Length: 104
Image (cartoon, rainbow, N blue to C red; front, side, top):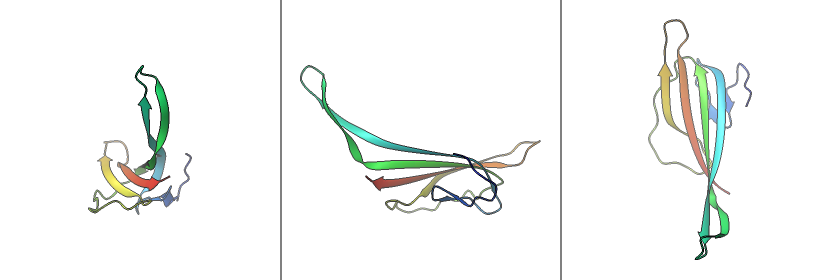
């Protein structure tokens, strides 16, 4: 997914203040459930009802590393991890991971 300078939100996840968006990725996954007959052949496979969406934001700048506690709410992104990397010759960079659970 392409990004532009000045973007403040990607797929519902907010870019922290004083940070510039570098790259993003959004991955959705759905579990599948199947059952097999006695010969081991899959008879039926159906998708699960919950969709898990993971959004990763790579930003330039030191993002706050606070992750708020609390329960997940359906359809709302919640930050689950944060990492800051620094080097001698480059700006600090941060990686923020958000997850969202929703019903199909």
